[in-house]
Amino acid sequence: MLAIPLVGGCTVVSPGTRGVKVSLGKVSSQIEAEGLVWHAPIITDIKTVSVRQQTKEMQSACYSSDLQQVTTKLQVLYRIPEDKVITLYQKYSGDPFEALIMPRINEAFKEVTASLTAEGIVKNRERVKQNALKNAKSKIGDLIHVEDLVIENIDLSEDLEQAIESKMVQQQEAAKAEFSKQKAQVEAETALIRAQGEANAINVRGKAIKDNPGLIDLTISEKWDGKAPLVVGAGHGANILLPIGGDKK
Image (cartoon, rainbow, N blue to C red; front, side, top):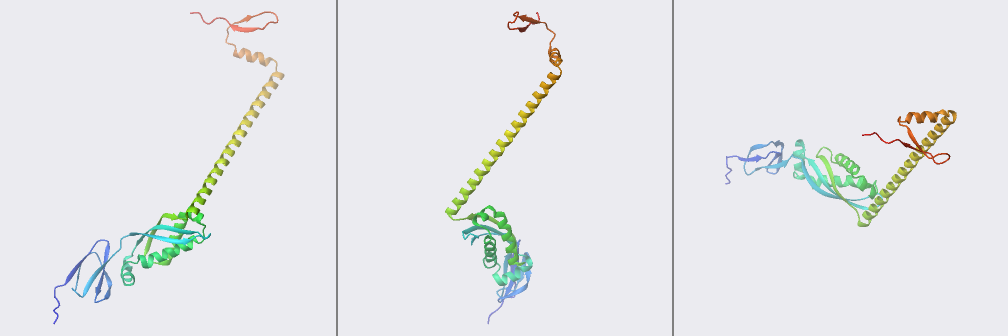
């Protein structure tokens, strides 16, 4: 006759985890909190499930709207809600990533990338990420909290990557040329405005002198420093005005 020990067994539920009590293959409806859990030996076991945020890597292979294959390397940040521990253990043995999370995220990415060209996926990776995250959350529901998706890399075919890179270089060169053209146009317009301003100023001064002949004498007298000039030459020769020697020491 089999003797069943009367002394109970015990299991420590670590911080950040919750315990699931399984007795003779039947799962208890009550989860066990952190700490020491007493249970019947042999016939009862305590399985632990993490409720911390976890990060796992995956790849999603899909096609763009222009039928280019796109492979995306992802980091998935997720957490199991405490009130779903029992359900997830019964359905997925406590680790729902491969059976629940990965298929839904793959499906979400396929839907998002199917509406964009390969070039659009590369250029709009944040938009792709946000839409895929929204779709994945909708598909998974409240069983798992998918906190975030991090796109580590987007792989295209080598020929396609070179074509996109070449196009981006051409666009940058075109933008640079347009900037140089606009700069030259602004400089030309500025020079024209400056020349027009100088021409207008000359016309104004010429008209003022014509209308007021004494203006020249007034200008000369305003600029005279009070020193008597020395006249060199006579008659119709060149008249050169030289100042009398400097201050005597």
